[in-house]
Length: 498
Image 1 (cartoon, rainbow, N blue to C red):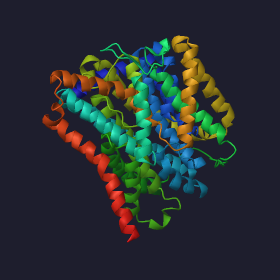
Image 2: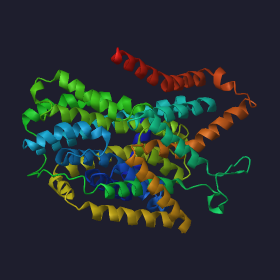
Image 3: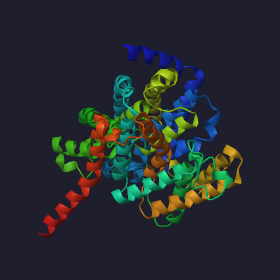
């Protein structure tokens, strides 16, 4: 009942005319960037960070939430009509949805993706409403040593999950941690990795790093491959809609996908990729039309899309209650919290209840707005795929430069932006995931702070990390996550040789 009362108070905040306007701007922008290939919600929120610095936090986060959910809705359009999954979690949608579109069933594929996203997003937000306060109550009692261990677990699992190689993920993570250390140590006053440059004594602004790695890096990468990637857009005629048979075959996969997606999004090692693949496998086993899988089965779009959106709601649970991001967009949202001097975690529900509950209430409102925007306006969004990509990315480059310069009016920041843009390009070119680096930059200082607090409480005794039961358990899990996968791969390789 307490959660319901808080949620109603959140609706009072979210339903003010100005916040409804920001929600509408957010879902429209989110759908727009979700549709445009290569531009996801993470990149968009990163680009908007400098612009929203002067906005009230509640309005800014309501807009960011709209972008986050809208990006999920819009990404299905690109996957289905262009066969280009914007994120790895949309691969299955591209696989089956594009086949449906090629068979003349683009409208049904888009409709089951949009309605499934609405169903999963609404149920996922309802679960978030009740799960987040309960977890926050427990999280208040977690000691600093266990919080440090939890961040270590997030580092390891995220490095292993993103990208094709855990080693590349860890290298990316250490790059981010190194960047996060630049500046003056607040306790000792010692300068770290400043190379004698006074501009670096205050550290590197994470917004510059995020925009450089995400926006500029992506722009350079797309520019370098523009002549290699040629794709054809399937024309959509009429609105997105489903017939009675499509409804009958879709509603169960929507619910099953939601059940799979939410818990995976809520755990540090989760994310959206695993539940979408599990949902596809499950629907393939349960379907009465196995011959259609691989050729455009509607269950193969409905289930994974629902899992994808349910996991998006689940991702907000560890972000809001523990301050742990489990996806690229969540990492940028964490950066946005820090921009406003806020630290997501259990105390956020007490110190900024209006912000948290306004944000959660806006997710319900945004879902309704997204359904209204995506079903009747599907042909309009489809036309966006015809925008020439050079124009699009040139605009992003200009927007990035102006945004970073406006932070401190510093030319040095522009050099840093260019440097991180080149690094971001190199990471994409050589298949290093960018997300672990971003999470290292943002969470590295928090991990250091929790580590030092734990040592101060134990009078410098490192044994606190072994004696505190929860800390020891999490650190054992971290060690197993590092050691077990290579051992299992080596055993599998030996068996293959034999």
